[in-house]
Image 1 (spheres, rainbow, N blue to C red):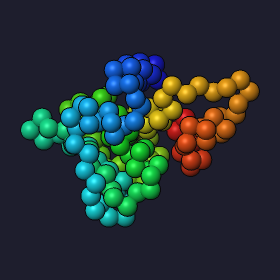
Image 2: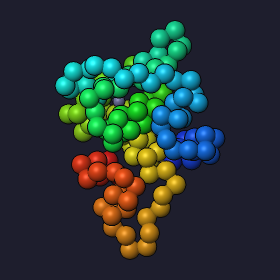
Image 3: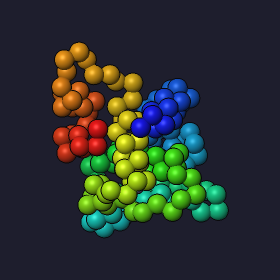
Image 4: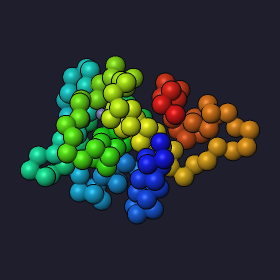
Length: 138
Ligand SMILES: [Zn+2]
């Protein structure tokens, strides 16, 4: 998705990082780690124009990174839209905004990394620190 590529390129240039937590902080988006039970990974809320990202405190390191990047994607790409909770089983949602947020998350985490010549998708994504279960989003 060309629009996503464009947004991410500008975001990384403006912030000097592809770290979603740092980008959120620089955008004055609160990232809160909460008890959200077994199924909800996170959600994005904007109340009285104050944006916040809520992340399940039980997620592992990569899931946390992905969930923050996904919610940041909603903030950047879907302002004013009420987005659904991110759940493990809706990672594979066919909903357009969810697919866009997953695409955004993957591209942000990949950042400025480029596949090397003859490098497989799997090798490339692993080199970017992305576990195999997420490769389907690339
Ligand atoms: Zn979402």
